[in-house]
Image (cartoon, rainbow, N blue to C red; front, side):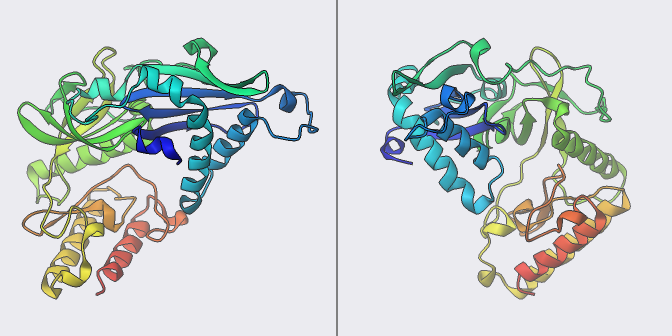
Length: 350
């Protein structure tokens, strides 16, 4: 991005794009949530290609359309070009409603406030041949306003009554790892640290539904059988007002001296004995998962935690696959897990 980045704290939360008629982008701007709607210019709608310069709204729509399908290595360049255009015009308007903070991380919000913040809507439009950004109502935005998740949504997941259910208002965020339409955060509840995963859409998000199904099955197994090296499910998160399940709480696993995940580890600094221990634990854990009908899914080094005792813990059971670790055709299969284990062994240089 350009000069504005040094003054303001800006993070992309969400992009809605896919056609040439309009798009929007939601930003975390100095801890405020801002959505900028962009509608196609009259030149574009009328099929007028004689203009010497593409109107800014058409250029931004094109960039956002590219961003949602871009490869990882191209995404940053595309989104930064779009942000430069939007922030270059709108920084003054945005800063009025969301001024820079001396320490944007000093507050400790509850999960509900973090996941469902007030959204300030703006529009980017060329007026009298000059690009402008101005406030609009939610009804005039590109996207339909969100509604609270429905507790009656027909899901295959059913919570176990033996596990507690926590309101999103009662969970305090300590550190955010992932933000946007969902969050992965270190949180505090009942005086203890936990890992919180929550999604704005609740169980309508298939990844959350899948992870809850898997972790609950692992938790049930751990009650009566050998403990599987997966952080234990500690409870569910419900929407503070609708009561719908929107997330989960699991054990917080502190990091080892080598790093938080296997991906962070300097493999050359790890002894052969420790590497062999890790591989044995990974293989045993994956086999135990398959024995109870659970597939890891997105197996890779960054989804393995190393704890202070140098034991490993497998995380992320929302499904999917990652290029370089699992072939797409093997996604969400036991065969895909086995392929991921082979790649992890190579990653450890064994």
